[in-house]
Image (tube, rainbow over all chains, first blue to last red; front, side, top):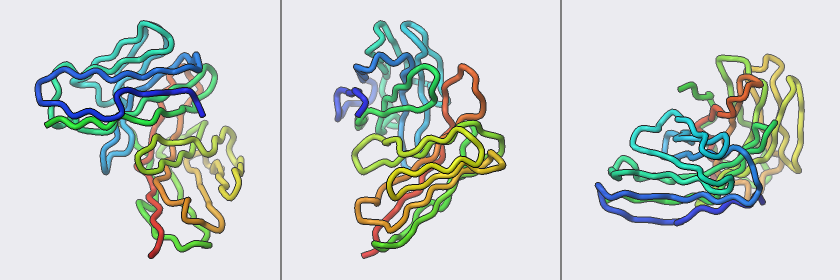
Length: 112
Length: 113
């Protein structure tokens, strides 16, 4: 199994509060991704990173920001959480010269 | 954004049955990936395909990269209860440095009672 961990695994938070999710990898892979998964929508890309301090938006980036200060860590921040951001969030990684992505175990976020 | 057309959306399976599912795209793909997701876990890569016509197996699973390069198929032979879950296809249109994938909505396998 690829060495990917996500923390926390579960979180309940109130509308309007900031939330940060962490993805940590031990594979030294260049690319890291944040997805959200909702019933009927499959996996949707929020943001991705192609190197330290290099990030770009995915298809559902509004309301989210990311940071990558080290190869192994990719943080997803909800500046002011809304109920529409209740979802399961997955981190994924991939190496150079391959499109194969490997996923973490996910974080279930509930915004009340 | 573009999404792959994955079918069927769900299917009931009886132990021992063979299962088939597919993904189609409106554009040509150069890479097809098949994943399985168990409840409460992240998707796990099953099979990766890189050439048109390629047929690749992983145990009882066989996937094919369609000749038209606009589709891919996954077959499961002699299904067992642990095959239940959601199967996703994902694809890549080119060989550029954009590493984003396009995803299907998933096929949910459910065991018949």
